[in-house]
Amino acid sequence: MSLMNYLTIGVMCITLILFIDLNSVNAIRNIPCTGGFKTEPHVANCIVDPLGKEKYQCPLDQCGQDNTHFVSWGGCVPITYYPGEPSGETTQNCVTYGYYDQTHYTCKNANGHTYICNHKIEDRPVISCNC
Image (tube, rainbow, N blue to C red; front, side, top):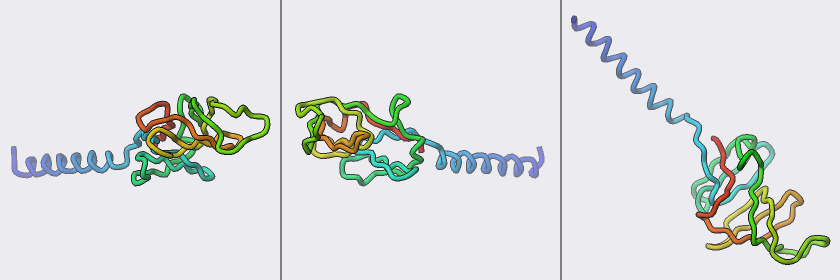
């Protein structure tokens, strides 16, 4: 094998390694929104940690849980009295949520009503985003 063949193989290997490394940077990841989940028009803010230091903006249509755009959490009590809704603990379908303290999260349902729910950061389900 000539020197030119060795150089060609070397350049091909380096190019392949660089391509693989650069491609992994742009890879889509499934990110669990354990610290919170907020929405804006067409964009979701997926918060990973309770302090909000690690967060991602993802396309809203790439976020969900079991093919839904909400999570069902039990042990929820309303922050404000909502006429026509139960006043004790209920299960809510949370379309947005956020860390409140070590054992509670805030939860907003599709009606825009806010609740405090029994939930810890390690509890599941949470919404995940592919971004």
